[in-house]
Length: 293
Image (cartoon, rainbow, N blue to C red; front, side, top):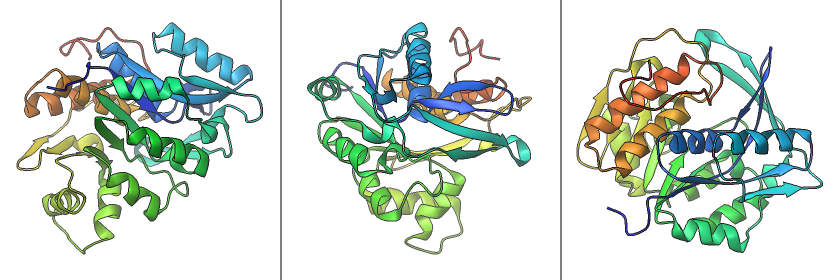
């Protein structure tokens, strides 16, 4: 059990996913914050939006869904973040991420310091670390965080190995997908077996909790000693936007509540599958482990 209150803080991008037919609120950290709040974990969001119509729309969405906006900064010079999303093979999404935008310039403030200092879990990704300004802010906040959760969430070409390794080295809980696992493990050794790749990362970076998502094949969780695998759920996929983010939120919500590893991974796969049946990363639902689909 954590010494601090079970309050989470997410750091990074809030943006609009511009799909072929519509625009949807998104950004991996905001998706995680949305689902954690839906699942009963008080979660705040540190980000930055432009002082424009897109920014106002995101703030309105967050307020509508009870995501606190007091830590979302306004930028008079940079626009709100956008991503141009198109459908690829097997329902996977392909992304063109606009740069520079407001979330590349997140500032350190007394409010952000206070929020992270009081939180039990600090959740961040790699996209907001693509520029020096937000990366410097992230580095300062990581020094305050109790449990650091890194959803690596790589989007080429918006990352490099040196920055990623600096972030991984400060991580307590690491979430990757299979492709990201392959990339990171290949930096250090030519290993073919899945379990060995995970153990390599856990040992090299001294991370006791490593989660790997496998798309329609479920996910695996390594707690530093034992592996837990779940085959996933077979569903009719609408799109995969936000599925991994909801997975992480589901996992953390159970972990924070003290659930067993098997329950954490099962619920995470369940909610990730549900979100894949919906359009966008933040569909409306009523929580409840047995009523998601």
